[in-house]
Each structure stands twice: as structure tokens, then as C-alpha cells.
Length: 170
Image (tube, rainbow, N blue to C red; front, top):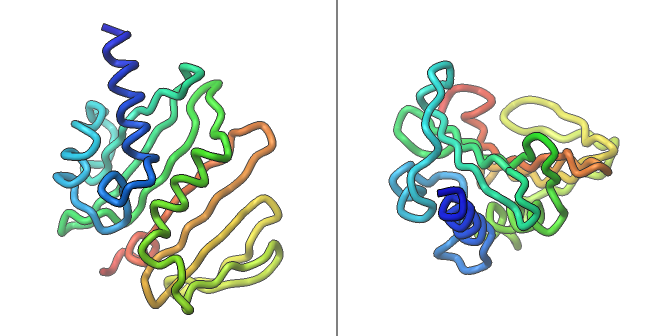
């Protein structure tokens, strides 16, 4: 059974990280959209919020990454993230693929800013400072912020959020 789960996880990882537009996951999708693409999410834990879904992704090194999606009251994703679990490592190509998939529809938008480490920026009416270990893309016009928190040991994470995730208002 583990072999089947491992192969399924690998297929999910490939779909999640594929370059073809039909395989991308991006902010604004519904759980039904994601289920069609990635299969059913992992079983919900009793303490987990009802508006959050998780998928486990097994890497080539048999380590586990967690892809987490938070949905708003209308059922659209407002936050998505990818992080390593346990001994797993989030390698740069996987993190970059996540960033690319989130950023694909707005890559050439003139309204997108890329703050440098130490630089202040605003999103969702709040002020942030880009940390030394972060890569940030922020675009209030298109309502997204992507953060790649890098870690030399591979324990970083990548996430994309809409303003609604931070403010609680659509």
C-alpha cells in the first residue's frame, strides 16, 4: 500500500509543480478545482479548521512536504503554502516552481513589487519589512503576496496570500 501511496504522492507533486497551466494551483481556486487536479486532500484532523485542506507530497528522497490551502467563506483559496515536515527539505527548484505557479498570471504586471531585504512594503493595509532570508513579490492591484522564506538547511517555506487572509474581509 505504501508503494501505491508513494506513487500517488509523486504524481500529486508532479501535478502541483508542473509547468503546464492546467496543472498549476493558484490563489482563487476552489476545493473542487484542487480535488480534480490533486485528488482528495489528506484526512482532516479533528482540531484543524474546517476551511483548510492539506495534501502530503512525497519527494524523490521519500521525505514529506505539506501543501496547505485556506479557503474563504465563498470557497475560494485565499492562502496556499508549501513546507517541509520532519527531516524533509524544501529544495529551491520545488519552491521556485510553487512561486512560478502562483505568479504565472501576473508575472509581467507593472504593479508587482519585489522588495529587497530590509526594505519596507505594504500589503492588505499593513506594513512589512522584507527579511534577509526572504524573497517577496507583492501586488495590491492583483491582490497577492508571495513570500519565500529561505533557510540554508532547507527548512524554509513558500506561501501566497490574498489580502482577505490578513484582514478577514473579502
